[in-house]
Image 1: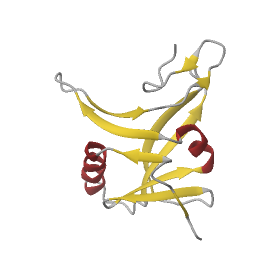
Image 2 (image 1 turned 135 degrees about the vertical axis):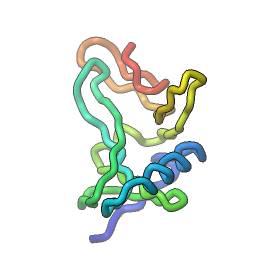
Image 3 (image 1 turned 180 degrees about the vertical axis):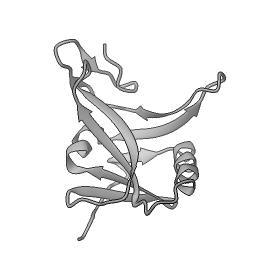
Image 4 (image 1 turned 30 degrees about the vertical axis):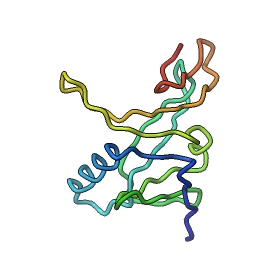
Length: 122
């Protein structure tokens, strides 16, 4: 199977995000193909975004390697995340999380839109 290449203009990772993903990949002992970025329809904002480790590649996947970390995005999700930057931020209170920057507005389920500052419902 030939995988499509995910362009830098489709999805980018900050150095902090790449480092944290590489660290987490090093802790996993399974046969992991990479980190899957996904979109799930539903809820107030219409679409929720997340990431998980995956051990398989599908026919509609787009893949890009960032310093040893493979990021995998299926064709349906790519339409929602095109132009997004994933960052990893740590707060002073010990809060640490991945953040999706530059999300494009998506029509909500009757209660607002998914904003460009991390997908919050307005």
